[in-house]
Length: 289
Length: 262
Image (tube, rainbow over all chains, first blue to last red; front, side, top):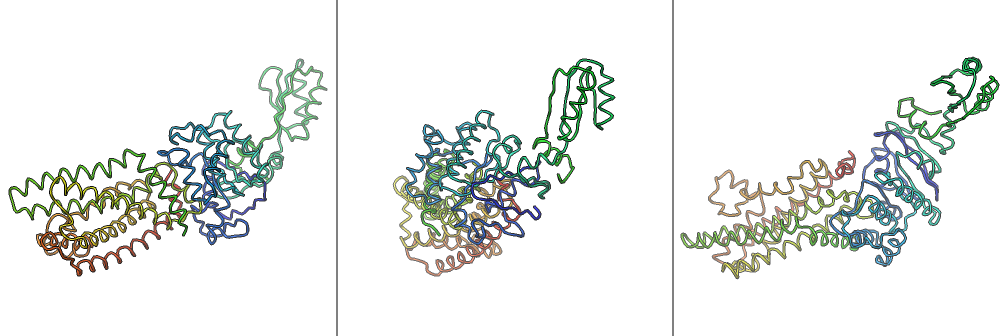
Protein backbone atom coordinates (compact mmCIF):
# COMPACT_ATOMS: atom_id res chain seq x y z
CA UNK A 1 0.00 0.00 0.00
CA UNK A 2 1.33 3.42 -0.86
CA UNK A 3 0.10 6.79 0.40
CA UNK A 4 -3.44 5.66 1.11
CA UNK A 5 -5.28 8.47 2.84
CA UNK A 6 -8.97 8.92 3.50
CA UNK A 7 -11.40 9.84 6.24
CA UNK A 8 -14.85 8.60 7.14
CA UNK A 9 -17.64 10.77 8.50
CA UNK A 10 -20.17 9.68 11.06
CA UNK A 11 -23.05 7.72 9.54
CA UNK A 12 -21.37 7.34 6.16
CA UNK A 13 -20.54 4.21 4.21
CA UNK A 14 -17.25 4.19 2.36
CA UNK A 15 -16.71 1.51 -0.26
CA UNK A 16 -13.31 0.09 -1.12
CA UNK A 17 -13.25 -1.34 -4.61
CA UNK A 18 -10.58 -2.76 -6.82
CA UNK A 19 -9.47 -5.88 -8.64
CA UNK A 20 -7.94 -8.84 -6.82
CA UNK A 21 -4.62 -7.84 -5.29
CA UNK A 22 -5.52 -4.14 -5.30
CA UNK A 23 -5.08 -3.91 -1.54
CA UNK A 24 -8.64 -3.78 -0.22
CA UNK A 25 -8.24 -6.53 2.37
CA UNK A 26 -4.76 -5.34 3.35
CA UNK A 27 -6.22 -1.87 3.94
CA UNK A 28 -8.92 -3.35 6.18
CA UNK A 29 -6.30 -5.41 8.03
CA UNK A 30 -4.28 -2.26 8.71
CA UNK A 31 -7.43 -0.43 9.80
CA UNK A 32 -8.04 -3.06 12.49
CA UNK A 33 -4.41 -3.34 13.53
CA UNK A 34 -3.64 -6.95 12.60
CA UNK A 35 -1.25 -5.79 9.88
CA UNK A 36 1.18 -3.00 10.68
CA UNK A 37 1.86 -0.26 8.13
CA UNK A 38 5.55 0.63 7.74
CA UNK A 39 4.66 4.30 7.78
CA UNK A 40 1.80 6.67 8.42
CA UNK A 41 -0.96 6.36 10.96
CA UNK A 42 -4.47 5.04 11.42
CA UNK A 43 -6.62 7.31 13.57
CA UNK A 44 -10.03 6.74 15.09
CA UNK A 45 -11.87 9.51 16.90
CA UNK A 46 -8.67 11.55 16.90
CA UNK A 47 -6.60 8.80 18.52
CA UNK A 48 -3.75 6.83 16.98
CA UNK A 49 -4.77 3.17 16.66
CA UNK A 50 -1.38 1.77 17.66
CA UNK A 51 -0.84 4.08 20.63
CA UNK A 52 -4.42 3.78 21.89
CA UNK A 53 -5.23 0.32 20.58
CA UNK A 54 -7.59 -0.72 23.37
CA UNK A 55 -9.58 2.53 23.35
CA UNK A 56 -9.93 2.50 19.55
CA UNK A 57 -10.81 -1.17 19.17
CA UNK A 58 -13.40 -0.88 21.94
CA UNK A 59 -15.37 1.47 19.66
CA UNK A 60 -15.01 -0.34 16.34
CA UNK A 61 -15.79 -3.81 15.08
CA UNK A 62 -15.29 -6.01 12.06
CA UNK A 63 -17.23 -8.45 9.95
CA UNK A 64 -15.96 -10.56 7.11
CA UNK A 65 -17.09 -13.53 5.12
CA UNK A 66 -13.55 -14.88 5.49
CA UNK A 67 -13.08 -14.54 9.25
CA UNK A 68 -15.19 -17.10 11.01
CA UNK A 69 -15.91 -17.72 14.64
CA UNK A 70 -14.64 -20.77 16.52
CA UNK A 71 -16.28 -23.63 14.65
CA UNK A 72 -16.25 -26.25 17.39
CA UNK A 73 -18.25 -24.34 19.95
CA UNK A 74 -21.81 -23.10 19.80
CA UNK A 75 -23.00 -19.76 18.49
CA UNK A 76 -24.01 -18.70 22.02
CA UNK A 77 -20.61 -19.65 23.45
CA UNK A 78 -18.80 -17.78 20.67
CA UNK A 79 -20.87 -14.65 21.19
CA UNK A 80 -20.46 -14.85 24.96
CA UNK A 81 -16.66 -15.00 24.58
CA UNK A 82 -16.63 -11.97 22.26
CA UNK A 83 -19.02 -10.05 24.49
CA UNK A 84 -16.60 -10.60 27.38
CA UNK A 85 -13.63 -9.57 25.22
CA UNK A 86 -15.49 -6.28 24.68
CA UNK A 87 -16.42 -6.18 28.38
CA UNK A 88 -20.09 -5.83 27.49
CA UNK A 89 -22.29 -5.21 30.51
CA UNK A 90 -24.98 -7.92 30.83
CA UNK A 91 -23.69 -9.89 27.83
CA UNK A 92 -26.46 -12.51 27.89
CA UNK A 93 -29.13 -9.86 27.45
CA UNK A 94 -27.19 -8.14 24.68
CA UNK A 95 -26.71 -11.38 22.75
CA UNK A 96 -30.38 -12.26 23.12
CA UNK A 97 -31.49 -8.84 21.85
CA UNK A 98 -29.20 -8.90 18.83
CA UNK A 99 -29.97 -12.56 18.18
CA UNK A 100 -33.69 -11.74 18.02
CA UNK A 101 -33.06 -8.73 15.74
CA UNK A 102 -31.04 -10.80 13.26
CA UNK A 103 -33.27 -13.87 13.51
CA UNK A 104 -30.65 -16.25 14.85
CA UNK A 105 -32.19 -17.00 18.26
CA UNK A 106 -32.90 -20.59 17.21
CA UNK A 107 -29.25 -21.09 16.16
CA UNK A 108 -27.71 -20.27 19.52
CA UNK A 109 -27.24 -23.90 20.57
CA UNK A 110 -25.72 -25.02 17.28
CA UNK A 111 -22.01 -25.36 16.64
CA UNK A 112 -20.83 -22.53 14.40
CA UNK A 113 -19.32 -24.89 11.81
CA UNK A 114 -22.71 -26.51 11.17
CA UNK A 115 -24.32 -23.22 10.03
CA UNK A 116 -25.02 -22.27 6.41
CA UNK A 117 -23.15 -19.37 4.80
CA UNK A 118 -26.12 -17.03 5.30
CA UNK A 119 -26.49 -18.02 8.96
CA UNK A 120 -22.76 -17.49 9.55
CA UNK A 121 -23.01 -14.02 8.02
CA UNK A 122 -25.84 -13.09 10.38
CA UNK A 123 -23.95 -14.46 13.39
CA UNK A 124 -20.90 -12.47 12.28
CA UNK A 125 -23.05 -9.35 12.10
CA UNK A 126 -24.29 -9.98 15.66
CA UNK A 127 -20.66 -10.34 16.75
CA UNK A 128 -19.85 -7.10 14.93
CA UNK A 129 -22.48 -5.18 16.90
CA UNK A 130 -21.91 -6.60 20.40
CA UNK A 131 -19.95 -3.56 21.56
CA UNK A 132 -22.30 -0.96 20.01
CA UNK A 133 -19.52 0.14 17.66
CA UNK A 134 -19.39 3.53 16.03
CA UNK A 135 -17.38 2.18 13.09
CA UNK A 136 -17.75 -1.24 11.48
CA UNK A 137 -15.35 -2.57 8.89
CA UNK A 138 -16.93 -5.07 6.53
CA UNK A 139 -14.76 -7.16 4.22
CA UNK A 140 -16.97 -8.66 1.51
CA UNK A 141 -19.75 -9.55 3.95
CA UNK A 142 -22.01 -10.88 1.20
CA UNK A 143 -19.43 -13.07 -0.56
CA UNK A 144 -20.65 -16.64 -1.00
CA UNK A 145 -24.25 -15.67 -0.19
CA UNK A 146 -27.09 -16.34 -2.60
CA UNK A 147 -28.74 -13.20 -4.05
CA UNK A 148 -31.76 -13.30 -1.74
CA UNK A 149 -29.68 -13.56 1.45
CA UNK A 150 -27.22 -10.99 0.11
CA UNK A 151 -30.09 -8.57 -0.51
CA UNK A 152 -31.45 -9.09 2.99
CA UNK A 153 -27.98 -8.60 4.44
CA UNK A 154 -27.65 -5.32 2.57
CA UNK A 155 -31.06 -4.22 3.86
CA UNK A 156 -29.90 -5.01 7.39
CA UNK A 157 -26.74 -2.96 6.87
CA UNK A 158 -28.80 -0.06 5.53
CA UNK A 159 -31.18 -0.17 8.48
CA UNK A 160 -28.25 -0.39 10.91
CA UNK A 161 -26.70 2.70 9.39
CA UNK A 162 -30.01 4.53 9.79
CA UNK A 163 -30.86 3.34 13.29
CA UNK A 164 -27.37 3.53 14.84
CA UNK A 165 -25.70 6.21 12.72
CA UNK A 166 -22.99 3.65 12.01
CA UNK A 167 -19.96 4.52 9.94
CA UNK A 168 -18.98 1.63 7.70
CA UNK A 169 -15.98 0.77 5.57
CA UNK A 170 -17.22 -1.75 3.03
CA UNK A 171 -15.29 -3.85 0.52
CA UNK A 172 -17.01 -5.87 -2.18
CA UNK A 173 -16.67 -7.17 -5.71
CA UNK A 174 -20.38 -6.53 -6.26
CA UNK A 175 -20.70 -3.16 -8.00
CA UNK A 176 -24.45 -3.02 -7.60
CA UNK A 177 -24.07 -3.43 -3.83
CA UNK A 178 -21.57 -0.63 -3.64
CA UNK A 179 -23.70 1.63 -5.81
CA UNK A 180 -26.67 0.87 -3.58
CA UNK A 181 -25.25 1.45 -0.13
CA UNK A 182 -22.05 3.51 -0.35
CA UNK A 183 -21.91 7.27 0.00
CA UNK A 184 -18.37 7.37 -1.29
CA UNK A 185 -16.17 4.93 -3.17
CA UNK A 186 -12.42 4.54 -3.29
CA UNK A 187 -10.96 2.57 -6.16
CA UNK A 188 -7.69 0.87 -5.34
CA UNK A 189 -5.25 -0.58 -7.82
CA UNK A 190 -1.84 -2.02 -6.98
CA UNK A 191 -1.97 -0.39 -3.57
CA UNK A 192 -2.81 3.10 -4.82
CA UNK A 193 -6.00 5.13 -4.76
CA UNK A 194 -6.84 5.66 -8.43
CA UNK A 195 -10.27 7.23 -8.00
CA UNK A 196 -12.34 8.56 -5.13
CA UNK A 197 -15.85 9.98 -5.46
CA UNK A 198 -19.52 9.24 -4.94
CA UNK A 199 -20.79 6.27 -6.99
CA UNK A 200 -22.66 8.68 -9.28
CA UNK A 201 -19.61 10.91 -9.57
CA UNK A 202 -17.44 7.99 -10.56
CA UNK A 203 -19.79 6.75 -13.25
CA UNK A 204 -20.00 10.25 -14.71
CA UNK A 205 -16.26 10.05 -15.32
CA UNK A 206 -16.92 7.38 -17.90
CA UNK A 207 -18.08 9.46 -20.83
CA UNK A 208 -19.57 6.91 -23.13
CA UNK A 209 -23.06 5.47 -23.06
CA UNK A 210 -24.13 2.78 -25.51
CA UNK A 211 -27.36 3.10 -27.52
CA UNK A 212 -28.75 0.05 -29.27
CA UNK A 213 -31.59 0.76 -31.69
CA UNK A 214 -33.69 -1.71 -33.64
CA UNK A 215 -35.48 -0.24 -36.62
CA UNK A 216 -37.36 -1.01 -39.84
CA UNK A 217 -36.23 0.62 -43.10
CA UNK A 218 -33.09 1.44 -45.07
CA UNK A 219 -30.00 0.38 -43.12
CA UNK A 220 -27.54 2.26 -45.41
CA UNK A 221 -29.26 5.59 -44.76
CA UNK A 222 -29.10 5.09 -40.98
CA UNK A 223 -25.47 4.15 -41.17
CA UNK A 224 -24.53 7.12 -43.37
CA UNK A 225 -26.37 9.63 -41.17
CA UNK A 226 -24.84 8.33 -37.95
CA UNK A 227 -21.30 8.01 -39.25
CA UNK A 228 -21.43 11.66 -40.34
CA UNK A 229 -21.89 12.69 -36.71
CA UNK A 230 -20.55 9.86 -34.50
CA UNK A 231 -17.21 8.09 -34.49
CA UNK A 232 -18.23 4.76 -32.99
CA UNK A 233 -21.10 3.23 -34.97
CA UNK A 234 -21.62 -0.45 -35.65
CA UNK A 235 -24.30 -2.62 -37.25
CA UNK A 236 -24.06 -5.98 -35.52
CA UNK A 237 -27.21 -7.44 -37.17
CA UNK A 238 -29.78 -6.65 -39.81
CA UNK A 239 -31.69 -3.48 -38.82
CA UNK A 240 -29.79 -3.07 -35.56
CA UNK A 241 -27.36 -0.25 -34.91
CA UNK A 242 -25.16 0.45 -31.91
CA UNK A 243 -23.75 3.87 -31.17
CA UNK A 244 -21.22 4.48 -28.46
CA UNK A 245 -21.09 8.12 -27.55
CA UNK A 246 -20.95 10.60 -24.71
CA UNK A 247 -24.00 10.39 -22.52
CA UNK A 248 -25.31 13.87 -23.35
CA UNK A 249 -25.26 13.04 -27.09
CA UNK A 250 -27.57 10.04 -26.71
CA UNK A 251 -30.76 12.02 -27.62
CA UNK A 252 -29.00 13.37 -30.71
CA UNK A 253 -28.11 9.85 -31.84
CA UNK A 254 -31.70 8.68 -31.50
CA UNK A 255 -32.94 11.82 -33.26
CA UNK A 256 -30.51 11.16 -36.15
CA UNK A 257 -31.78 7.60 -36.56
CA UNK A 258 -35.39 8.79 -36.47
CA UNK A 259 -34.66 11.39 -39.17
CA UNK A 260 -33.17 8.75 -41.49
CA UNK A 261 -36.60 7.71 -42.71
CA UNK A 262 -36.78 4.51 -40.67
CA UNK A 263 -39.23 3.37 -38.05
CA UNK A 264 -37.69 2.83 -34.64
CA UNK A 265 -38.89 -0.42 -33.03
CA UNK A 266 -36.80 -0.60 -29.86
CA UNK A 267 -34.29 1.55 -27.99
CA UNK A 268 -31.88 0.23 -25.35
CA UNK A 269 -29.63 2.74 -23.61
CA UNK A 270 -26.84 1.47 -21.40
CA UNK A 271 -25.46 4.20 -19.22
CA UNK A 272 -22.00 3.84 -17.61
CA UNK A 273 -22.00 1.89 -14.37
CA UNK A 274 -19.53 1.45 -11.56
CA UNK A 275 -18.66 -1.82 -13.22
CA UNK A 276 -17.42 0.10 -16.27
CA UNK A 277 -15.21 2.15 -13.97
CA UNK A 278 -13.98 -1.05 -12.34
CA UNK A 279 -13.27 -2.70 -15.71
CA UNK A 280 -11.44 0.35 -16.96
CA UNK A 281 -9.16 0.22 -13.92
CA UNK A 282 -8.82 -3.55 -13.90
CA UNK A 283 -7.84 -3.57 -17.57
CA UNK A 284 -4.99 -1.23 -16.84
CA UNK A 285 -6.36 2.11 -17.96
CA UNK A 286 -5.24 3.49 -14.64
CA UNK A 287 -6.75 6.67 -13.33
CA UNK A 288 -10.32 7.45 -14.19
CA UNK A 289 -10.45 11.16 -14.67
CA UNK B 1 -4.26 -5.97 31.36
CA UNK B 2 -7.92 -6.91 31.79
CA UNK B 3 -8.88 -9.86 33.96
CA UNK B 4 -12.24 -9.99 32.22
CA UNK B 5 -10.63 -10.51 28.80
CA UNK B 6 -8.27 -13.13 30.25
CA UNK B 7 -11.32 -14.86 31.67
CA UNK B 8 -13.01 -14.70 28.25
CA UNK B 9 -10.08 -16.53 26.64
CA UNK B 10 -10.13 -19.09 29.46
CA UNK B 11 -13.85 -19.55 28.92
CA UNK B 12 -13.25 -20.20 25.22
CA UNK B 13 -10.47 -22.65 26.11
CA UNK B 14 -12.85 -24.50 28.38
CA UNK B 15 -15.52 -24.72 25.66
CA UNK B 16 -13.01 -25.96 23.04
CA UNK B 17 -11.48 -28.49 25.40
CA UNK B 18 -14.86 -29.84 26.43
CA UNK B 19 -16.21 -30.07 22.87
CA UNK B 20 -13.19 -31.27 20.85
CA UNK B 21 -12.64 -34.99 20.55
CA UNK B 22 -9.11 -34.22 19.36
CA UNK B 23 -8.23 -32.39 22.57
CA UNK B 24 -9.78 -35.11 24.69
CA UNK B 25 -7.75 -37.75 22.82
CA UNK B 26 -4.52 -35.72 22.84
CA UNK B 27 -4.69 -34.81 26.53
CA UNK B 28 -6.57 -37.05 29.02
CA UNK B 29 -6.79 -40.12 26.77
CA UNK B 30 -3.10 -40.04 25.86
CA UNK B 31 -2.09 -39.45 29.48
CA UNK B 32 -4.25 -42.31 30.72
CA UNK B 33 -2.92 -44.74 28.13
CA UNK B 34 0.65 -43.69 28.95
CA UNK B 35 0.28 -44.17 32.70
CA UNK B 36 -1.31 -47.60 32.27
CA UNK B 37 1.11 -48.94 29.61
CA UNK B 38 4.22 -47.76 31.42
CA UNK B 39 2.74 -48.92 34.71
CA UNK B 40 2.71 -52.48 33.44
CA UNK B 41 6.14 -52.09 31.82
CA UNK B 42 7.51 -50.86 35.16
CA UNK B 43 5.84 -53.70 37.04
CA UNK B 44 7.46 -56.19 34.65
CA UNK B 45 10.91 -54.56 34.81
CA UNK B 46 10.73 -54.34 38.61
CA UNK B 47 10.19 -58.12 38.73
CA UNK B 48 13.36 -58.86 36.75
CA UNK B 49 15.72 -56.07 37.87
CA UNK B 50 16.36 -53.54 40.60
CA UNK B 51 12.85 -52.15 41.35
CA UNK B 52 14.12 -48.62 42.03
CA UNK B 53 15.86 -48.46 38.66
CA UNK B 54 12.69 -49.71 36.98
CA UNK B 55 10.79 -46.91 38.70
CA UNK B 56 13.05 -44.33 37.02
CA UNK B 57 11.28 -45.05 33.75
CA UNK B 58 7.83 -44.61 35.31
CA UNK B 59 8.83 -41.46 37.17
CA UNK B 60 10.19 -39.90 33.98
CA UNK B 61 7.03 -40.87 32.11
CA UNK B 62 4.73 -39.27 34.69
CA UNK B 63 6.76 -36.08 35.00
CA UNK B 64 7.18 -35.73 31.24
CA UNK B 65 3.39 -35.41 31.05
CA UNK B 66 3.73 -32.00 32.75
CA UNK B 67 5.91 -30.75 29.88
CA UNK B 68 3.84 -32.43 27.16
CA UNK B 69 0.45 -31.19 28.38
CA UNK B 70 1.64 -27.65 29.11
CA UNK B 71 3.48 -27.18 25.83
CA UNK B 72 0.62 -28.77 23.85
CA UNK B 73 -1.89 -26.47 25.48
CA UNK B 74 0.22 -23.36 24.87
CA UNK B 75 0.87 -24.08 21.20
CA UNK B 76 -2.35 -25.82 20.17
CA UNK B 77 -4.62 -23.33 21.95
CA UNK B 78 -3.82 -20.77 19.25
CA UNK B 79 -3.96 -23.29 16.42
CA UNK B 80 -7.54 -24.26 17.22
CA UNK B 81 -8.49 -20.66 16.54
CA UNK B 82 -6.23 -20.34 13.47
CA UNK B 83 -7.84 -23.45 11.96
CA UNK B 84 -11.28 -21.95 12.63
CA UNK B 85 -10.28 -18.62 10.99
CA UNK B 86 -11.03 -16.98 14.32
CA UNK B 87 -7.59 -16.08 15.65
CA UNK B 88 -7.21 -12.67 14.01
CA UNK B 89 -10.88 -12.00 14.86
CA UNK B 90 -9.93 -12.13 18.54
CA UNK B 91 -7.23 -9.49 18.08
CA UNK B 92 -9.62 -7.09 16.39
CA UNK B 93 -11.15 -6.78 19.84
CA UNK B 94 -9.29 -4.91 22.61
CA UNK B 95 -7.69 -8.25 23.60
CA UNK B 96 -3.90 -7.88 23.67
CA UNK B 97 -1.48 -10.67 22.83
CA UNK B 98 -0.10 -10.50 26.38
CA UNK B 99 -3.57 -11.09 27.83
CA UNK B 100 -4.03 -13.98 25.41
CA UNK B 101 -0.70 -15.57 26.35
CA UNK B 102 -1.35 -15.16 30.08
CA UNK B 103 -4.72 -16.89 29.61
CA UNK B 104 -3.04 -19.73 27.73
CA UNK B 105 -0.47 -20.08 30.53
CA UNK B 106 -3.21 -20.31 33.15
CA UNK B 107 -5.15 -22.79 31.04
CA UNK B 108 -2.04 -24.89 30.43
CA UNK B 109 -1.16 -24.91 34.13
CA UNK B 110 -4.69 -25.98 35.09
CA UNK B 111 -4.76 -28.81 32.53
CA UNK B 112 -1.29 -29.92 33.53
CA UNK B 113 -2.09 -29.88 37.25
CA UNK B 114 -5.34 -31.81 36.84
CA UNK B 115 -3.85 -34.42 34.49
CA UNK B 116 -0.70 -34.87 36.59
CA UNK B 117 -2.87 -35.37 39.68
CA UNK B 118 -4.96 -37.95 37.80
CA UNK B 119 -2.01 -39.93 36.39
CA UNK B 120 -0.17 -39.76 39.71
CA UNK B 121 -3.29 -41.11 41.47
CA UNK B 122 -3.64 -43.94 38.95
CA UNK B 123 0.06 -44.76 39.39
CA UNK B 124 -0.40 -44.84 43.16
CA UNK B 125 -3.60 -46.89 43.27
CA UNK B 126 -3.06 -49.30 40.35
CA UNK B 127 0.71 -49.67 40.24
CA UNK B 128 1.78 -48.93 43.80
CA UNK B 129 3.98 -46.04 42.70
CA UNK B 130 3.57 -42.93 44.82
CA UNK B 131 5.23 -39.84 43.33
CA UNK B 132 4.88 -38.16 46.73
CA UNK B 133 7.38 -40.67 48.08
CA UNK B 134 10.10 -38.33 46.81
CA UNK B 135 8.62 -35.57 48.97
CA UNK B 136 5.92 -32.99 48.35
CA UNK B 137 8.54 -30.22 48.05
CA UNK B 138 10.45 -32.03 45.31
CA UNK B 139 7.22 -32.74 43.43
CA UNK B 140 6.02 -29.13 43.79
CA UNK B 141 9.29 -27.51 42.77
CA UNK B 142 9.68 -30.00 39.94
CA UNK B 143 6.18 -29.26 38.71
CA UNK B 144 6.78 -25.50 38.67
CA UNK B 145 10.15 -25.83 36.91
CA UNK B 146 8.82 -28.22 34.26
CA UNK B 147 5.76 -26.01 33.77
CA UNK B 148 7.91 -22.95 33.23
CA UNK B 149 10.23 -24.71 30.81
CA UNK B 150 7.18 -25.87 28.80
CA UNK B 151 5.90 -22.27 28.78
CA UNK B 152 9.15 -21.19 27.14
CA UNK B 153 9.00 -23.95 24.54
CA UNK B 154 5.31 -23.25 23.90
CA UNK B 155 5.96 -19.53 23.41
CA UNK B 156 8.87 -20.25 21.08
CA UNK B 157 6.75 -22.57 18.93
CA UNK B 158 3.81 -20.16 18.94
CA UNK B 159 6.11 -17.35 17.77
CA UNK B 160 7.45 -19.49 14.93
CA UNK B 161 3.92 -20.45 13.86
CA UNK B 162 2.72 -16.84 13.90
CA UNK B 163 5.68 -15.77 11.80
CA UNK B 164 5.93 -18.67 9.34
CA UNK B 165 2.35 -19.90 9.24
CA UNK B 166 0.66 -23.21 9.75
CA UNK B 167 2.93 -25.01 7.27
CA UNK B 168 5.28 -25.66 10.19
CA UNK B 169 2.48 -26.48 12.65
CA UNK B 170 3.90 -29.99 13.15
CA UNK B 171 6.41 -28.32 15.48
CA UNK B 172 3.55 -27.87 17.92
CA UNK B 173 3.58 -31.62 18.51
CA UNK B 174 7.09 -32.61 17.59
CA UNK B 175 9.64 -30.05 18.72
CA UNK B 176 9.35 -30.77 22.42
CA UNK B 177 10.38 -34.39 21.85
CA UNK B 178 13.93 -33.18 21.10
CA UNK B 179 14.26 -32.48 24.80
CA UNK B 180 13.22 -35.94 25.93
CA UNK B 181 16.62 -37.61 25.29
CA UNK B 182 18.55 -34.41 26.03
CA UNK B 183 17.11 -33.87 29.52
CA UNK B 184 17.68 -37.43 30.78
CA UNK B 185 13.99 -37.88 31.42
CA UNK B 186 14.10 -41.68 31.79
CA UNK B 187 17.68 -42.42 32.83
CA UNK B 188 20.38 -40.91 35.05
CA UNK B 189 22.46 -38.14 33.57
CA UNK B 190 25.57 -40.21 34.24
CA UNK B 191 24.75 -42.71 31.47
CA UNK B 192 25.02 -40.01 28.80
CA UNK B 193 28.31 -39.24 27.02
CA UNK B 194 30.21 -36.31 28.63
CA UNK B 195 29.44 -33.95 25.75
CA UNK B 196 25.72 -34.66 25.95
CA UNK B 197 25.86 -34.32 29.74
CA UNK B 198 27.10 -30.76 29.23
CA UNK B 199 24.26 -30.12 26.80
CA UNK B 200 21.76 -31.67 29.22
CA UNK B 201 22.88 -29.36 32.03
CA UNK B 202 21.79 -26.41 29.91
CA UNK B 203 18.15 -27.49 30.26
CA UNK B 204 16.12 -27.08 33.48
CA UNK B 205 14.24 -30.43 33.25
CA UNK B 206 17.55 -32.30 33.60
CA UNK B 207 17.89 -31.03 37.19
CA UNK B 208 14.24 -31.77 37.93
CA UNK B 209 14.53 -35.37 36.73
CA UNK B 210 17.85 -35.90 38.55
CA UNK B 211 16.40 -34.51 41.77
CA UNK B 212 13.27 -36.63 41.40
CA UNK B 213 15.25 -39.85 40.91
CA UNK B 214 17.40 -39.04 43.92
CA UNK B 215 14.23 -38.22 45.86
CA UNK B 216 12.89 -41.76 45.37
CA UNK B 217 15.64 -42.98 47.68
CA UNK B 218 15.97 -39.93 49.94
CA UNK B 219 12.91 -37.66 50.07
CA UNK B 220 14.79 -34.40 50.56
CA UNK B 221 14.60 -31.26 48.48
CA UNK B 222 17.71 -30.68 46.40
CA UNK B 223 17.74 -26.91 46.69
CA UNK B 224 20.82 -26.53 44.48
CA UNK B 225 19.18 -28.34 41.59
CA UNK B 226 15.90 -26.48 42.12
CA UNK B 227 17.73 -23.15 42.09
CA UNK B 228 19.76 -23.98 38.96
CA UNK B 229 16.62 -25.12 37.15
CA UNK B 230 14.78 -21.95 38.22
CA UNK B 231 17.67 -19.71 37.13
CA UNK B 232 17.85 -21.42 33.73
CA UNK B 233 14.09 -21.14 33.41
CA UNK B 234 14.28 -17.39 33.98
CA UNK B 235 16.80 -17.11 31.14
CA UNK B 236 14.77 -19.32 28.79
CA UNK B 237 11.53 -17.53 29.62
CA UNK B 238 12.99 -14.06 29.07
CA UNK B 239 14.48 -15.20 25.76
CA UNK B 240 11.25 -16.84 24.65
CA UNK B 241 9.18 -13.74 25.52
CA UNK B 242 11.62 -11.57 23.56
CA UNK B 243 11.57 -14.03 20.64
CA UNK B 244 7.77 -14.27 20.69
CA UNK B 245 7.37 -10.48 20.76
CA UNK B 246 9.77 -10.14 17.82
CA UNK B 247 8.04 -12.86 15.78
CA UNK B 248 4.57 -11.47 16.53
CA UNK B 249 5.66 -7.97 15.46
CA UNK B 250 7.30 -9.29 12.28
CA UNK B 251 4.22 -11.39 11.56
CA UNK B 252 2.06 -8.25 11.62
CA UNK B 253 4.57 -6.18 9.68
CA UNK B 254 4.74 -8.72 6.87
CA UNK B 255 1.00 -9.42 6.85
CA UNK B 256 1.62 -13.07 7.76
CA UNK B 257 -0.51 -12.77 10.89
CA UNK B 258 -3.63 -12.18 8.79
CA UNK B 259 -2.55 -14.60 6.04
CA UNK B 260 -2.23 -17.47 8.52
CA UNK B 261 -5.96 -18.02 8.21
CA UNK B 262 -6.24 -17.82 4.41
